[in-house]
Length: 139
Image (cartoon, rainbow, N blue to C red):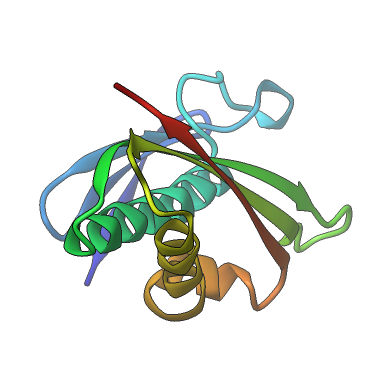
């Protein structure tokens, strides 16, 4: 896996992933940025959220659950001193579907957190991680 970061101007950068996708990042105005794109740490958090959402949906589909939607909200706290690592991250899942089995939803989240989601497992090396979830029944 690889990624190349190129400085654009000010505190804006563009990342080109090994698969050829582009992601722009920018800094906060107080740090010389123009607030044109997400901060790098926001993208780190988004990556962890995308990783676990992917896992949960895939596991539920393989468990023959009629999952229709999955959102994961991440609420994070960072250290006050440099390096300002994440110290606490709360993952809040909302899984929607028809007749979803609560045990299977909980199992999917647990498997993602403990076995499959590399991004959240790495975050767990510096942060206290917690998981909350709810099921929403849809017609």
